[in-house]
Image (cartoon, rainbow, N blue to C red):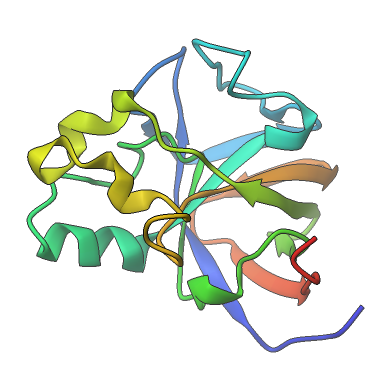
Length: 164
Protein backbone atom coordinates (compact mmCIF):
# COMPACT_ATOMS: atom_id res chain seq x y z
CA UNK A 1 0.00 0.00 0.00
CA UNK A 2 1.47 3.33 -1.05
CA UNK A 3 0.82 6.43 1.05
CA UNK A 4 -0.46 9.47 -0.84
CA UNK A 5 -0.98 13.05 0.26
CA UNK A 6 -4.23 13.37 -1.67
CA UNK A 7 -7.15 14.47 0.46
CA UNK A 8 -10.49 16.19 0.23
CA UNK A 9 -13.75 16.53 2.16
CA UNK A 10 -17.24 15.12 2.29
CA UNK A 11 -19.21 17.97 0.75
CA UNK A 12 -22.60 16.25 0.97
CA UNK A 13 -24.06 12.93 2.13
CA UNK A 14 -27.08 11.81 0.06
CA UNK A 15 -29.77 9.21 0.74
CA UNK A 16 -33.27 8.33 -0.45
CA UNK A 17 -36.04 5.81 0.05
CA UNK A 18 -35.35 4.65 -3.51
CA UNK A 19 -34.99 6.72 -6.64
CA UNK A 20 -33.62 10.14 -7.52
CA UNK A 21 -32.62 12.63 -6.44
CA UNK A 22 -30.99 11.54 -3.22
CA UNK A 23 -31.40 14.18 -0.53
CA UNK A 24 -28.79 15.80 1.71
CA UNK A 25 -28.06 14.37 5.16
CA UNK A 26 -25.89 15.92 7.89
CA UNK A 27 -24.48 12.57 9.05
CA UNK A 28 -24.90 8.89 8.33
CA UNK A 29 -23.97 5.48 9.66
CA UNK A 30 -22.05 3.42 7.10
CA UNK A 31 -22.37 -0.36 7.24
CA UNK A 32 -21.35 -3.11 4.81
CA UNK A 33 -24.47 -2.35 2.73
CA UNK A 34 -23.77 1.39 2.50
CA UNK A 35 -25.62 4.19 4.27
CA UNK A 36 -27.98 2.79 6.87
CA UNK A 37 -30.78 5.17 5.80
CA UNK A 38 -30.41 4.77 2.02
CA UNK A 39 -32.44 2.44 -0.18
CA UNK A 40 -32.38 1.50 -3.86
CA UNK A 41 -35.43 1.12 -6.08
CA UNK A 42 -33.82 -1.55 -8.28
CA UNK A 43 -31.46 -3.80 -6.33
CA UNK A 44 -30.63 -5.83 -9.43
CA UNK A 45 -28.39 -2.98 -10.62
CA UNK A 46 -27.85 -0.91 -7.45
CA UNK A 47 -26.65 -1.74 -3.95
CA UNK A 48 -25.08 -4.89 -2.60
CA UNK A 49 -21.61 -5.27 -1.11
CA UNK A 50 -19.69 -4.34 -4.29
CA UNK A 51 -21.94 -1.30 -4.92
CA UNK A 52 -22.54 -0.29 -1.30
CA UNK A 53 -21.72 3.37 -1.90
CA UNK A 54 -21.80 5.59 -4.96
CA UNK A 55 -19.36 8.55 -5.05
CA UNK A 56 -19.01 11.59 -7.25
CA UNK A 57 -16.95 14.78 -7.33
CA UNK A 58 -18.30 18.25 -6.55
CA UNK A 59 -15.80 19.70 -9.01
CA UNK A 60 -17.17 17.46 -11.78
CA UNK A 61 -20.72 18.54 -10.89
CA UNK A 62 -19.75 22.23 -11.05
CA UNK A 63 -18.06 21.71 -14.43
CA UNK A 64 -21.15 19.93 -15.74
CA UNK A 65 -23.32 22.81 -14.51
CA UNK A 66 -21.04 25.21 -16.40
CA UNK A 67 -21.75 23.17 -19.56
CA UNK A 68 -25.48 23.82 -19.01
CA UNK A 69 -26.53 20.58 -17.32
CA UNK A 70 -29.06 20.84 -14.46
CA UNK A 71 -27.15 18.40 -12.24
CA UNK A 72 -26.66 19.11 -8.51
CA UNK A 73 -25.22 17.13 -5.57
CA UNK A 74 -27.35 14.00 -5.06
CA UNK A 75 -29.21 14.40 -8.37
CA UNK A 76 -27.63 11.41 -10.08
CA UNK A 77 -27.67 9.07 -7.13
CA UNK A 78 -24.31 9.48 -5.46
CA UNK A 79 -24.25 8.82 -1.73
CA UNK A 80 -21.14 10.90 -1.18
CA UNK A 81 -20.37 14.11 -3.01
CA UNK A 82 -16.66 14.68 -2.42
CA UNK A 83 -14.67 17.88 -2.88
CA UNK A 84 -10.98 18.57 -3.23
CA UNK A 85 -9.87 15.16 -4.57
CA UNK A 86 -8.18 14.72 -7.94
CA UNK A 87 -11.00 12.68 -9.51
CA UNK A 88 -8.61 11.14 -12.05
CA UNK A 89 -7.00 9.23 -9.16
CA UNK A 90 -10.27 7.64 -8.08
CA UNK A 91 -10.01 4.30 -9.89
CA UNK A 92 -11.06 0.71 -9.13
CA UNK A 93 -8.77 -0.55 -6.37
CA UNK A 94 -8.29 2.88 -4.77
CA UNK A 95 -8.94 2.94 -1.03
CA UNK A 96 -10.29 5.99 0.76
CA UNK A 97 -10.52 6.76 4.44
CA UNK A 98 -13.63 8.81 5.21
CA UNK A 99 -13.75 10.56 8.57
CA UNK A 100 -12.19 8.85 11.57
CA UNK A 101 -13.20 5.23 10.95
CA UNK A 102 -14.75 4.44 7.58
CA UNK A 103 -12.58 2.72 4.98
CA UNK A 104 -13.87 2.06 1.46
CA UNK A 105 -12.45 0.60 -1.74
CA UNK A 106 -13.52 1.67 -5.21
CA UNK A 107 -14.85 -1.38 -7.08
CA UNK A 108 -15.85 0.00 -10.48
CA UNK A 109 -17.21 2.88 -12.51
CA UNK A 110 -21.00 3.18 -12.61
CA UNK A 111 -23.03 2.66 -15.75
CA UNK A 112 -25.39 5.60 -16.24
CA UNK A 113 -29.02 4.91 -17.09
CA UNK A 114 -32.00 6.79 -18.49
CA UNK A 115 -33.18 7.77 -14.98
CA UNK A 116 -30.46 10.44 -15.19
CA UNK A 117 -31.95 12.13 -18.29
CA UNK A 118 -33.65 15.04 -16.45
CA UNK A 119 -30.31 16.27 -15.13
CA UNK A 120 -28.51 16.51 -18.47
CA UNK A 121 -28.77 18.84 -21.43
CA UNK A 122 -30.58 17.08 -24.28
CA UNK A 123 -31.05 14.12 -21.89
CA UNK A 124 -27.45 13.09 -22.67
CA UNK A 125 -26.68 11.14 -19.53
CA UNK A 126 -23.77 9.47 -21.34
CA UNK A 127 -21.89 12.60 -20.28
CA UNK A 128 -21.06 10.67 -17.08
CA UNK A 129 -20.14 7.43 -18.86
CA UNK A 130 -16.55 6.31 -18.28
CA UNK A 131 -16.53 4.64 -21.72
CA UNK A 132 -17.69 7.77 -23.57
CA UNK A 133 -16.11 10.44 -21.34
CA UNK A 134 -13.21 9.01 -19.29
CA UNK A 135 -12.76 10.75 -15.95
CA UNK A 136 -16.38 11.90 -15.65
CA UNK A 137 -18.06 8.82 -14.17
CA UNK A 138 -19.36 8.18 -10.69
CA UNK A 139 -17.80 5.21 -8.91
CA UNK A 140 -19.07 2.38 -6.71
CA UNK A 141 -17.29 1.31 -3.54
CA UNK A 142 -17.35 -1.54 -1.04
CA UNK A 143 -17.16 -0.80 2.67
CA UNK A 144 -14.11 -2.32 4.37
CA UNK A 145 -14.56 -0.64 7.76
CA UNK A 146 -17.86 0.73 9.06
CA UNK A 147 -18.57 3.81 11.15
CA UNK A 148 -20.20 7.21 11.22
CA UNK A 149 -19.51 9.96 8.71
CA UNK A 150 -20.59 13.59 8.62
CA UNK A 151 -20.47 16.52 6.24
CA UNK A 152 -17.02 18.11 6.35
CA UNK A 153 -15.17 14.91 7.23
CA UNK A 154 -11.74 14.53 5.67
CA UNK A 155 -11.39 12.00 2.84
CA UNK A 156 -7.89 10.64 2.27
CA UNK A 157 -6.64 8.51 -0.58
CA UNK A 158 -4.59 5.88 1.20
CA UNK A 159 -3.88 3.42 -1.60
CA UNK A 160 -4.23 3.34 -5.34
CA UNK A 161 -5.00 0.12 -7.16
CA UNK A 162 -3.74 -1.13 -10.47
CA UNK A 163 -7.03 -0.68 -12.40
CA UNK A 164 -8.03 -4.28 -11.73
